[in-house]
Each structure stands twice: as C-alpha cells, then as structure tokens.
Image (cartoon, rainbow, N blue to C red; front, side, top):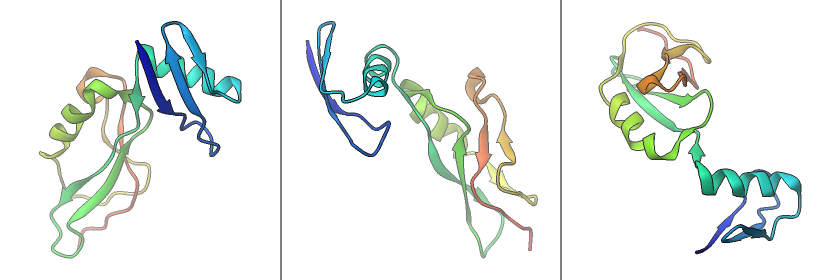
Length: 115
C-alpha cells in the first residue's frame, strides 16, 4: 500500500512516500523517523480551548504537553468540553494530568485571572 504525506518535522516540508517497507522523499534522517512514526503509531499535539467562568475571557488556550496517539484526539477534545476554569491560571499550569490514562498532561498556553 502506497501512502504519501508531508513531513512536518522541519520547515522544508519534504513530500514523503511510503510504499510497503520503502520510504522515499526525505532529505534528512528526521524525515525517515517521522515517516516510520506516522505509519506505525501517528501522534499529534492537541491545541484547543476550554471554557472559563469569566464574561470577559470566555476561553483559555490549552494544549497537550507532548504528542498523543492520533486515535485519541477526539476523545481528548470531548473530555475538555466539560472543563470550566474558575481559578487563576498561569502559562504552563497543568489543567488535567494524565488525561485518558495516557501520561500526557493538558497545560495552559495562556494565563487566566479571576475577575
């Protein structure tokens, strides 16, 4: 089975082609490692927002602290829909630790102050 995708490891954006166990199109070893990861167990960093109790700043930017299995992205977002921030938060604060038993944390990408 032939699969084509763009490498996102660096700004070059190599066009990778995976055909069976043959990988081509990578200009560096990082592209090869990325292609292998994409085929075996694709992962993504999830960036989204969660609700706050503030009428001024209604959403707070959050993200995973490292990539999570691509198959779990929608489950993570669904879990975050139920979160409402009510306390002061600084950038990097953990909002949810070990989300969905993955050892991945949800951290704040912005600050929030209770008004």
